Length: 306
Image (cartoon, rainbow, N blue to C red; front, top):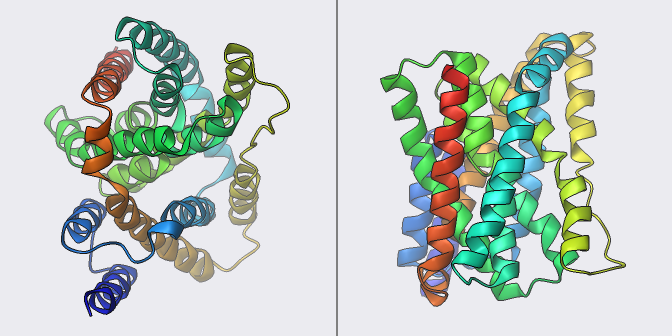
């Protein structure tokens, strides 16, 4: 009986979110509370659903962007992107050894913080031959900090009177996962959303060199490197919108639907946070993740403001 109720509640929540009655932070909290009350009946499909829904929503958001603005935004965020990735990866490697943490777990947490959260962890995991438990813990930590970011970043942004451009760039650099980057900037403004999405996706391309570097670091060979091809679809969507190939009413509908799919994704992220998994490895992985996150958040904010 409880399984039936959990399935009904699951479908009901997603339906309510799809019709636009729930915002990003609320969807994530509902997801977390749901797992405390019920056992997720679709847990085995959860990470795949997050993976595909995120890509679909990001590509859909491309129909609300213009190519000229996108190129300019990517250029503006390039220096900060390179600097923050190099510094975070270096600090992560040093802290992993200092804390005597499992090297694979430390590398996954560091990669997720430096580049793009769950996507980086999913791409790097097979390259370094990480075990399922290690992957789950890394994802759980990243999703937990993403959840906090959804609430903390907009509050700090308003307190410091950050412009749309400043806030969008800060989100793209300092928040781990693309879903939370878009979720945090969604309520801040359209320009912040555009900048955050563009810079974050250009940052995602760094998965490729990081994968090769990880292969060398862990002395693994013959593993397939995952390339984020969906970024090409995102660029295609921007081109379609820039040349007005589709009617404006159609592109507006696609963008609006994509935002709602993204909020569904955040609900799924909320259902993925496992307190049990986080406790199983002690406080060291969380300490590593928190230290790296504070570093990249403070460093990037000072960089942007100066």
